[in-house]
Structures are given as structure tokens and as C-alpha cells.
Amino acid sequence: MHDITSKTSMRAELLAERATMPPAARAAAGRSIRDALLSVPEIEMAGTVAAYVSIDTEPETRGLLFALWKRGTYVLLPLLLPDGDLDWASYEGPDSLVSGSRGCLEPSEPPRGVGAVASADVVLAPALAADRTGTRLGRGGGSFDRTLARVGPAILTVALLYDTELVPTLPAEPHDQRVRAAVTPSEGLVRLG
Picture 1 (tube, rainbow, N blue to C red):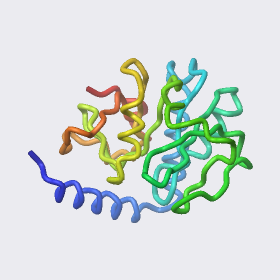
Picture 2: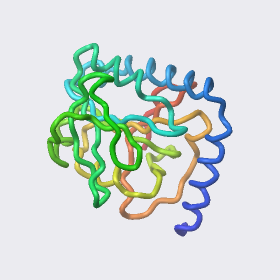
Picture 3: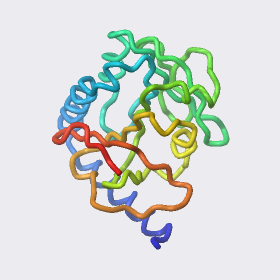
Picture 4: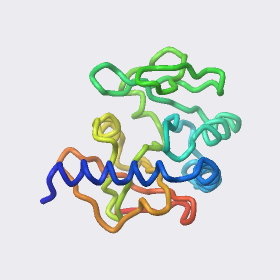
């Protein structure tokens, strides 16, 4: 059994590692991830994709969001609620994003409710790391664990990672929600579990 301290120190190490990555390398990783995801059959066929706007040193998602939207996919993006849960609203192109809570960009469209994510055909989740069983290490707020708990078992859930962040094993707690796949710049989509 791993304790919280190990997760906290892992988060700090992973964030520090991301901070050393040059912006050009982050941008290139984001493009590779975008191209890999756009060719995944479940995403090609998806009517609705729940995603997120990348922040700080996360793999860049803006190009992916735009590409999905341009090809007619309905894209849902999160709105962070005061209790840490996520509401969802539709992405209507780059001009529909406004500055939200905690400096995150959020959609300006009307909120559709925390349950809206259950209608998504694919859910893309931020992560600092994931392991081969699908255990996902987030930032520790639990927002996406709550979201993933609302998604049906047949829905493809994907963590977006840099190459070094798909690891053999991670500490897991009972409330942690697993993802069914990860995507990295070098490996593309990797099915987990």
C-alpha cells in the first residue's frame, strides 16, 4: 500500500520534469498527440468528445480541440465548480474560450451539468502519469476522478502524457478511477488494463 506522501512527491517530480521541457518540445508533443488521437477509430466515429484545455506544462490540446471541432465533432470542455467538481459546456472554436477559475480557459457557452460528460463517446483526461493497468495520477484535486466515475464502462477514456509518463506501476487508492488508454507522442494510443 502506497501512502499519500509518495503520490505528492511523485506529482512534484513529474511537474518539475515537465517544467524543464523546452516550449518547442511541448508543442511538438502536442502535435504528435493530436495526430495520433485524430486517427483513433473511436475518436473518428465519436459524435461527442469530452476534453480539456491544457494549462501550464501539460501536453498542448488547443490544436486537437480545434481539429475535432472543425471536423464536426461536438466537443465538451470542463467548467471548474467551487466544490472541485466539473460542469461541462460546448466548445465553439478558439474564440469561445474565456478565462475561468484558477486561470484555466473555459468555454463561454451555457453549462450543461455535471452529468453531461456521460453522453460523451470518448473522454480525454489530463494526467501527470499513468501505468499499464490504467491507474492515472492527476494533480490531486479529484475533479477528473469524479468525472471518470460518471462515464460508462464501454467509453474510451484516455490520459494525455509525455513519453516518460507512461510508467510500469503507480500507487492507487480506492477512489482513483482508471483510464482505458493513454496517448504519448512516440507510442500514440496505448490500450491499458
